[in-house]
Amino acid sequence: MATASISRRKATTVIASWRHMYSNSSKYSSIVSRGYSVSSGSDENDVVVIGGGPGGYVAAIKAAQLGLKTTCIEKRGALGGTCLNVGCIPSKALLHSSHMYHEATHSFANHGVRLSSVEVDLPAMMAQKDKAVGNLTKGIEGLFKKNKVTYVKGYGKFLSPSEVSVDTLEGGNTVIKGKNIIIATGSDVKSLPGITIDEKRIVSSTGALALSDVPKKLVVIGAGYIGLEMGSVWGRLGSEVTVVEFAADIVPTMDGEVRKQFQRSLEKQKMKFMLKTKVVSVDAAGNGVKLTLEPAAGGDQTTLEADVVLVSAGRTPFTAGLGLDKIGVETDKAGRILVNHRFGTNVPGVYAIGDVIPGPMLAHKAEEDGVACVEYIAGKEGHVDYDMVPGVVYTHPEVASVGKTEEQVKALGVDYRVGKFPLLANSRAKAIDDAEGVVKILAEKETDKILGVHIMAPNAGELIHEAVLALHYGASSEDIARTCHAHPTMSEALKEAAMATYDKPIHI
Image (cartoon, rainbow, N blue to C red; front, side, top):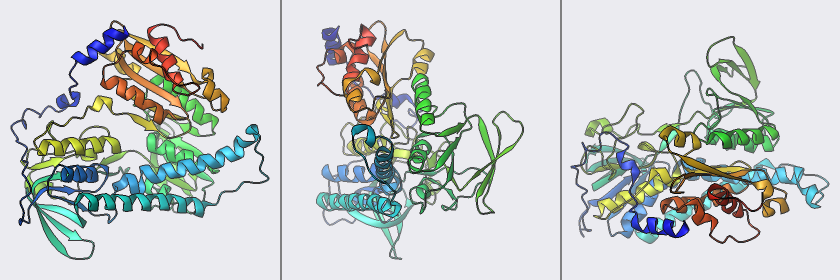
């Protein structure tokens, strides 16, 4: 089987499945990418990128590396976008710091490390987070200089398909011309009707990253990635956390079996869940915050009190003030910009990537979009397969996945096998006394081709990439099972799950 799988991989051309996602792709298929060599003495850029987040700054650097004269416009005044400044990076810094505190208070004694007292120094914790953000932001500026990307700090808006007016942070205005303009303005917090975010007592993820005190009671509206991660941070530091979710499940995109185990794990960490519950109103008139709730299906109202409420109901494309209507760029009902498989909009020379277009709103997806987009502009071939974009929830344990869930496989009507292996049977996990979790693999029954991998483990976000690579090359579960894995490592759990998928595992 392994040999046959290798032959299949060599014979298979990897095709970007997302090319068929948009019904209007054929409508825009006649748009031709316009790549030009750098013209000395001209003020016109080959590429102008509006937005300096993960998609934008990566696109700008890649464009410059391909020999295109490039300018990147960023309104924040600090590169890295939401992800680096008020998202992925600071949240992971706080997740790590809070986990260290939780380990010190809950696990050190089991390992023979006894401390007379442990306390949280929140200002120091925040300072470490801010230092990490600052260093990385400056690092991107350094990469711009190294690659000769022009960096303009200000708010850009279209004057025409080839001109962007920029109100600079210094107070002036300048017009940037470009033969190809890429919209990479990312996303913003999705608001909820009747709830005003003040970033003090009613906060978005931005405010939740900068609280001055540990709230006694924290209510999180929304049981997605961001809400659970930020709930974990403050729960570890002492908050009583309640998550209110309108849907019947947490993280609805997650594999159902893994999701249930994940929720049980969070509940053991004293996180409370109110599912199928609608938030009617949030009142911050008094000293605390009072939420009025009712069942999602309708019914009697109840109240819930909190010191801080985190609104984490998702994100929405950020295109405000860009002037898309002025140049005629088409969007869908959700405000996402419609693009073809080359990331071209219906307006020739105008492209869009990342959170402003359909697809998962993830920093690494935006980076892949950026690279592929400028490769097309430069006359090369780009590639992004949205079915192969991994997702990670950075709680503890982490949950990571790639490919199809079992529910999706069933819906497709595909005959499949399932292989699972618990972390409790993994020697490394047992040795470090951190053995909560499971690895689950779904494979096509006839060919053994892997369809999806789901991992709940302390370092699932690192383990998942072996699975991502396997899916990219059309591997079978037997291919992973017959690959030697170092011992003792948690990655052996993936090998054993693969063995369980096509045959039988050894250690259970």
